[in-house]
Image 1 (cartoon, rainbow, N blue to C red):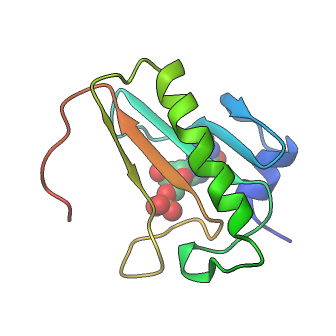
Image 2 (cartoon, helix red, strand yellow):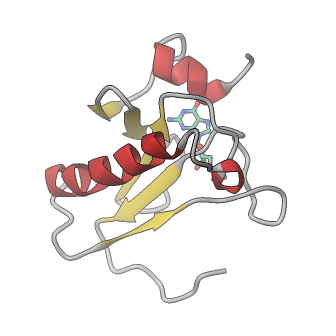
Amino acid sequence: MDCLFCKIISGEIPSSKVYEDEYCYAFRDINPQAPVHILVVPKCHIESADVICGGNSLYVAKVFEAIPKIAASESLSEGYRVITNIGKHGCQSVKHLHFHILGGKQLSEKMD
Ligand code: DGP
């Protein structure tokens, strides 16, 4: 499968890793939008949050278990934002489910 994030998970494409376990991989975004901008991805290929189902939701749960650990390791004690983009209107550019962790500054209230 020709998937950028599958290649990052396998190490074929280098990345700045911040966390890894059996189910997920986290690395720094190449184009950071905040002082801390990390992407967390499940190690199995899931196209987007729109196809989460009983067959793959364990990976999603494990991603969400990893997020507080990553936030703590990045000293995001004042809070942070978790975003996932879905499809064209959601401006999803990489078709492998990923959650952006944004923090390290006061984020805007604007959501769109
Ligand atoms: P989204 O627009 O939600 O699909 O976000 C995709 C993110 O992936 C975007 O913020 C930039 C990041 N990105 C794209 N290519 C690479 C890459 O090769 N390495 C890293 N570290 N991040 C990438």
